[in-house]
Amino acid sequence: MKYKNINTPLLALGSIMVLVVIVSTLHDVTALAVAWGVALLFGYPKHRQIFKALLPVVLMGGFILASYALFYAYRYDAWAPHIGSMALRMLAMSTWGFVAIYRIPLIVALRPFPTAQMLLTIAYGQYTLLTHQARQARRAWQSRNALSPSYFAQWRFFATLVLQVLDKALHQSHTVSQAMRSRGVFDA
Image (cartoon, rainbow, N blue to C red; front, side, top):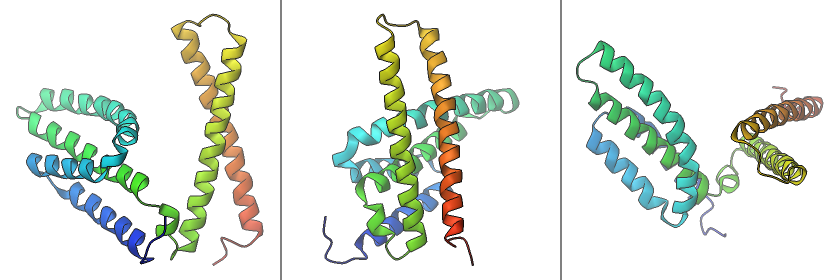
C-alpha cells in the first residue's frame, strides 16, 4: 500500500498511542463504552481478526476481574462500577491496540526509528518461527494419533508444546542477541 505522505502511518500510530493513554485515564463507564465503540468502528473491515485476538484478553481479563469482584465484595459494598470500568478500560485499550496492529503497517510507521523497525522485524521473525513450530508439532501429533485423544491428553500435549516452543524461543533470542552484540548493535 502506497501512501502519499510518508508520515501518515506514523501519525496514525501516534494518534492511537495517545488514545490508549487517554483511555487509561478515563473512569466514566459511558466514556469508556464510547471509546470501545469507536475502536470497533475504526477496526471495521478487520472485525473477525480483532474479535479473535480479543478472545484471550477477555478470558484472562475475566479471571482477573472475577478475583477483583471477590475482593471488592468481601471488602466493600459498592464494587460493580469499579469492575465495569476496569472491564471496559481493558477492552477499549486492547481493541485500540489491535486496531493499530491490523490497520497500520507498523514497519512503515516506524521508518523514522530504525532501531524500533529492526526490533519489530526480529519480533515478527520470531513470531513466524514459533507459529510454524507449533503448527508442525500439532500436525505431527495428529498424524501419530489415529483416534481423538482424551481432553487430559490434549492439555498434557499442549503443556509440553508450550515448554518446547518457549525453550526454543529463548535459545533463538539468545542467539540473535549474541549476533547483534557481535555486530555492535547495542554499543552506545
